[in-house]
Length: 187
Image 1 (tube, rainbow, N blue to C red):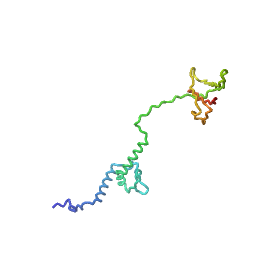
Image 2 (cartoon, helix red, strand yellow):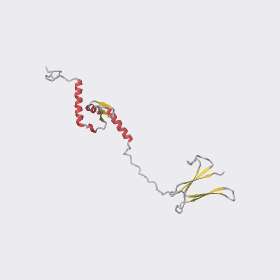
Image 3 (spheres, rainbow, N blue to C red):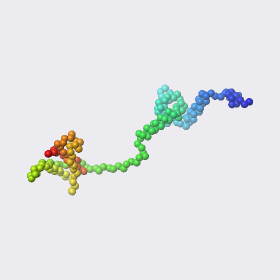
Image 4 (cartoon, one colour):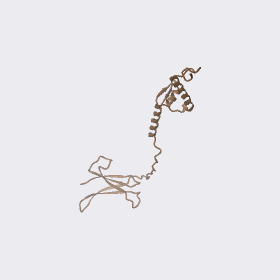
């Protein structure tokens, strides 16, 4: 009869190892293999604390020895935390895949100040209708160039609280600052 596959069957074999002994031996072999392949000094989450035990800064777990830490790095919790951290960093980092839009440089003008102006109230002698004469002085303006203008109601402007008694005239010529004239509506 063959006794070699039975517990204690082989002379000098010491018997078959128990489950806990087999598990401990397997962990030791994995630790030795991991120590050969992984450099713990380059691991950003590995830290030795003041008590002499080891910590995983990613998962906030404590380990008694380096082998325990290495086993932890191969585990489900550490891998899930690594994936979560990678997803967060990918979300926070600007994506390099999107092409950048070509930048359009705004036109640069030398600001030469506010234009001079004079407002004169007039009355038409025939009809008696009142009017306002706006005389604007643009000394730096080129010939045959008309400044842009716009009449605004009190509700369109954002400088003062709206008052329906007033209207505004907005004048703009590119190198000049804009000019906003306020005048009262006569009915």
